[in-house]
Image 1 (cartoon, rainbow, N blue to C red):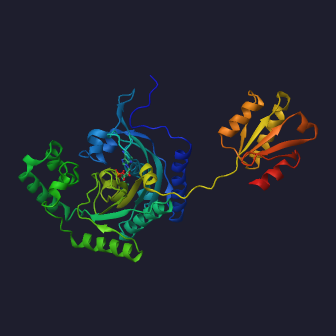
Image 2 (image 1 turned 60 degrees about the vertical axis):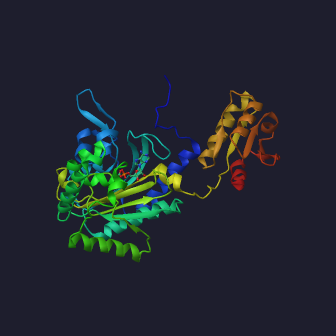
Image 3 (image 1 turned 30 degrees about the vertical axis):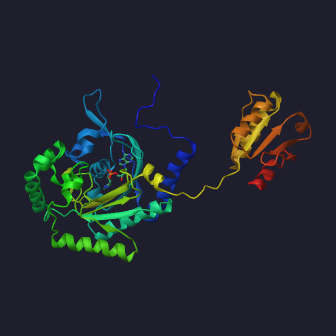
Length: 410
Ligand code: HAM
């Protein structure tokens, strides 16, 4: 049966242009920050995501599209870009050759979540990963880079939330305190959270069912001096760059690899208000079998940024349409269209299996600006008719000087 699968979309024309528009903006800004593009596979071994995104996350537990290939390997469609990027960094031995890497990626991700406005099963992310530095200035740079991209695309109303999740020094005590607390209220928690207590208690704070209920009374993280110093520096750098943010100790993020500074950009009031998120993941490279390499990054949801944006109206470019009045002029019309295109002029047409009336009708449907018509009368005089569809006015133009005349109209 020919039917689109729920949560997946066909994207046409203006909507597709918006996706491309955001990609173009992002690429330009990544260039100014000297980030380099990385293209990672859409499919990876499932194990990669289990080990990095995390065994206890919703993504790995219930949202991955996984399958067994003909060789019996269990693969998954990528639900996010960080694991593949880190795998590529390790596999290509970057830590030996050039440890500091600033990657960006643009690509589709797959998560089998319940579809809603702003939540799809196939969606696009633009992401940045900075591997090889633990400097708070990198955290601040990443946040400002993200802000530059979303605001350049026309997102005006947004909130930046930041938090620090602590490190291997201060996190273990916090984890222990959380486990004790959650065990004391275990009966009141949802089934998912009951298992999260031992696997990743921090995620209980992020639970859609229990999160809000437990946040107020749960123990708070006491940052070690090192984390405090780094976090204060991140905040000072953001302030000195006039970036407004909210310090939110309840911001957890739904992935297992984070430590230190984390952040989220939120827009709108719906449940899908996170337009982007990220943070530090200083242990991930090592945990995945690489060198002990600090790292941080983020990803934005392209569709959500578009929903939150108020884009400037695009400048409409002029479109020409070539019409052949009779079969004997088809080749000449074909050549005229190609000549115009070679000059960078937007040209449609070529529907020479249709009569002149049908071709004119199609040009109207396509919202064309000018039609070029070649028939017996025109060709005898080495001319072509140029009709302005907005005013209805028509004139004859020399075939020789056509490109010049057309360029005057753009
Ligand atoms: P994430 O928060 O899972 O982080 O996803 C980043 C963004 O992707 C979200 O803020 C949201 O805008 C968008 N997104 C997620 N799921 C969907 C969905 N089902 N439909 C539409 N948009 C969605 C990550 O993926 C991390 N890899 C970010 C990161 C990079 N952290 C460090 N480096």
